[in-house]
Image 1 (cartoon, rainbow, N blue to C red):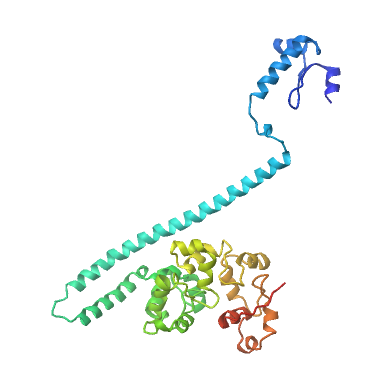
Image 2: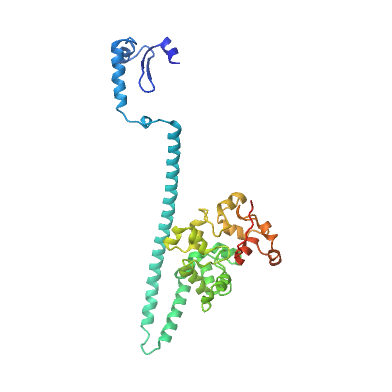
Amino acid sequence: YWAELQEKYATFGFTHCNGLGVVAVGPNVPPKVRALVDLTDDGELAGLVRSAYARLGAAVPTPWSMEGPSVAAVRRRLDEVEHELGDSRDEARRTAAELHYLRQRVADQQHILDRLGLVAKAADAIPLGFSRGTVGRVRDVARKATRWVEPGSSPVRDIFDHAWYARTYGLVGDRKQLLIDYIKDGANAGRSPNALFDGAWYASTNPDLAGMSRLEQAEHYVSLGGPEGRSPHPFFDGAFYLKNNPDVAASGFNPLVHYLKVGDSEGRRPNPYFDPAWYRRTTGVTGCAAQAYLAAPLPRSAPSEDFDPALYASTTEEAAQAGLDPLVLLLMRRDPRHASAG
């Protein structure tokens, strides 16, 4: 191609590096360009010009001046850098979400402390002649009243899914109204605050909490039980989640709160056999994959490549007899066996 241009136009070629050609086209060529292309190609002056520009080019560092230049290697490195940047952006988004959550919790707790400060002052104003038991009962009544007046003062708000609660129990109302219903009546009537907290399960698997009401047990889970690794539902293995997500364990976050807010969308598993990302991809569901799985009619699709519910059900009659999902049954029994879908 360069040879064809040389036949049609006045040209001057540089030979250093990968080469460079200057072509004079048209009647209005600048005088300096005209002087360059008029040089005799093999003349001494042309050699001096080429040598000068070669020295200038060598003084400018470029990515292509690396030892052993390889376009493929550079492209691979660029792909690696783009991947690293993507990971950094994802981590920044997760950190921002957690920071926002923490700031909101600090603001909420400060508001609660302000409200409870009034309760404490009222209790302190009780005559000193009253017994400690009487004062304690007054404080307990005051705390319960505060829950009803300000439902946001109950830790259970962090795991309360008002849309699921209304849909599951046939109720209507906004979030505050439904949360008040759960606090006043729902918890002790056996209702759950979301699909992944089963009050009866939590009570039966934590006999040390037998002296508490169902509401107090739910509040215990949010404040203490979750970070300790206790499980709120057979489908959500708290100890497993903390062990496999050391960032959550180190942060002190309640694992279920973390899972509902960001963990499910990030593809973190609530138990060894349920893969949220895989389940969304293979079934087309949106939103919380674990909630969608538990809401699906029986028989359900495989929860991951690691578990085949039909194969597991064929090894035990209990699932069919009890009308239970095979995966939930396995998790309830803490059965070490599992059936691979592969």
